Image (cartoon, rainbow, N blue to C red; front, side, top):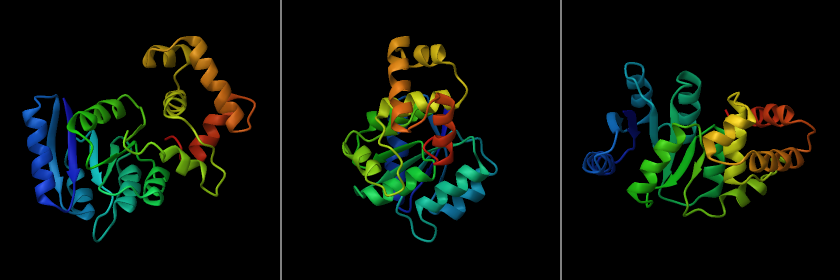
Amino acid sequence: MINIFIVDDHDFFIQGLSMAFVQANTSIRVVGTANSCSDALRLLQNLEVDVLLLDILMPEMNGIECCRRVKMDFPGIKVIGLTGEVDPVLMMELWRQSADAILLKSDGLDEVISAIESVMKNKKVFSKNVPNFMVYIDQQPDGVPRLTPRELEVLQLLGTGLARKEVAQELNLSMYSVGFHCKNLIRKFNGDKIHVVIAEAKKNRIIT
């Protein structure tokens, strides 16, 4: 069972999503909800939560700051940012705060469920309806390289301490494919060893 917590300032959205999970008959269980980030941070102290579904645009404390606080106070919780607008700057900032996934509120339930299951496997997820998100990352002035979703998955798993063979098994890839992605990562980060790339990626909060 995957325990999730929903944070959104619209009760209608919370109720609709909660009901959708029940009707879908999945292993996902909503254990708590909140209309503000301050309430969420208070309630999370007494709940066992695996995944937080977080509205990016929130009054009082916005989703960006909320994500930062959750990752600091509850590092074991995966955070999926939800937004009704394709705002690359906002998405990029949320990504910088170590969000595990970014989805649009217009995405279908299947994609939301898939994202929840993926982040539980330490995978990074981006909405399929934001195809240029990686381009936005590439255009940031801090010099962080553009990575493909698959490169991010490989990098994230390597960052957890898995060996290349284990990464290959986790992602159902050949050792050749994993090696190919590692070579690309080393090239993009201008490094010479993959452990240097991992350290740099963690420093820039590309992975956690």
